[in-house]
Figure 1 (spheres, rainbow, N blue to C red):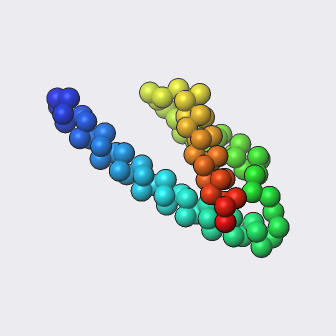
Figure 2: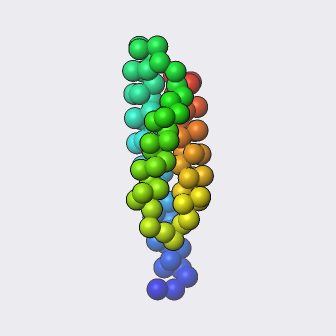
Figure 3: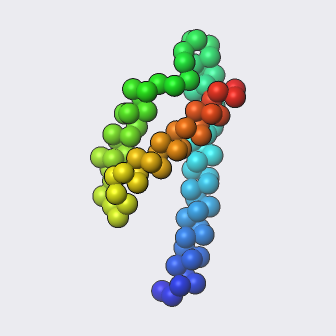
Amino acid sequence: MDLSDWRKRIDALNLQLVDLLNERAKCAVAIAEVKKKKMLPVLDAEREQQVISAVLAKNHGPLADDSIRRIFECIMAEHRRLEESH
């Protein structure tokens, strides 16, 4: 494959990532509604650590664990902001 082919592949993966992030966000909104009814805080540090541990256990590179951790911390922070707005 040449550079153009690799870029097309990256573009397709980016679109898949957007779809997956928005699907995850829909779940976060649903969770926010459950938490609101049960009067639970938006931030669940223990759950976030479970998520980080799970994705790190699945990581086999080439991204380093620290990179995966930062990516998921950012994803969770944005979805937490979404939960807070609902």
